Amino acid sequence: MYKIKLLMAFSIVMLFGCATPVKPPDAGFKLSNTESLTQQEKQELFYYTIDGEYKSNPFTVRNPYHKNTSFYREFSTSSKSSKGHISYKTTHATYKHRFTLDNDTINRTDLSRLSTNGSKEPDATYCMGCDDLGFSNYISEFQDRLFKSFQNNINDFMNYKQRYDENPVIVKFYNQSITSDFISRLTLSIEQQKNQTSAIGFFTGKKSFRDFEQKKLGRYEIEYENYGDKNNPTYNLAEVSFNFVPDFFVASDDNISVTIESGDMVRVKNTTTSFLDVTEMAGYYNDKVYSGLLKPHKQGGKVSIPPEAEMKFQIKHIREKHIPINSKNESVTYGYSIAYKLVNLDVLNNLYKTDEYSVSSY
Image (cartoon, rainbow, N blue to C red; front, side, top):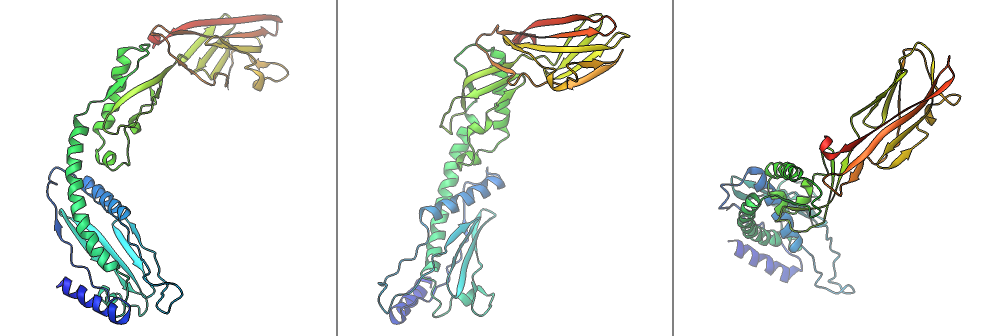
């Protein structure tokens, strides 16, 4: 029946120079091998197939006549595909078809509308003289190709999904400067992300195993080498750094107590019954000396603290706390020195303390 209609439309083209569009046949293609797929996997794979099929063979309009002849017609080429919808707009109508996946069956809904008389019936767009320039014929061929491509993609995805589930996460670091415990922890962390993520995003190209790269793990900071195999969850580490700065550092003497939290928040307490003036403060980390830490907080060249009072302020001197690890026994020196004086004695005192911190300290 569809071929007879197509033949009639062709005859009209030969007689009148324009095509009467033939309504595409119903879809209703039943798929197989979908039992182990989730609904989300089916839907994403369906849209992926539609987009791929349309991009590989889009609807195009070719003018069969030369421009400077009486047979020449201006053609609109506003065909597009989006989220299962394929549409084409002519001067008299918008031809639009929605492809959906329902109970493992590909269905098509005709949403075509005339733009001339306001009719909302799709059948009205398939009238004599309503030239869709071959779009309806394109849809008929498209839905046949879509079924075959989708079934092929289902079969390919099932094979890919099995490899995705079976391939173990492998973390490699050729420097040998970090412990096997760290490698195990990082591997487990990436593996947990992989196990909680469907393979469909990798199959369609929306995801990559690089999405699972753990940039930080505890006090570690990690950089990875580039790789391009989406089927191989192997992670080659380029560099591993470690934050040696302690959560709390305390230094004190008979007059003053200083606590530094995470290397930037400072609490200075005057433990005497006299006013105390802090005049200088310096920090030490990774063989670097950071002086002038009090400068933003000084008034009159000092920070004055009343008897038995505490002052809290922030310092921003260690811009990069993470240090590349070159040895399993890597360690750094960290600490502070503070110059102060008691007002009633006018004697300059110095509180100085540093400690050695290694990876095994944490």
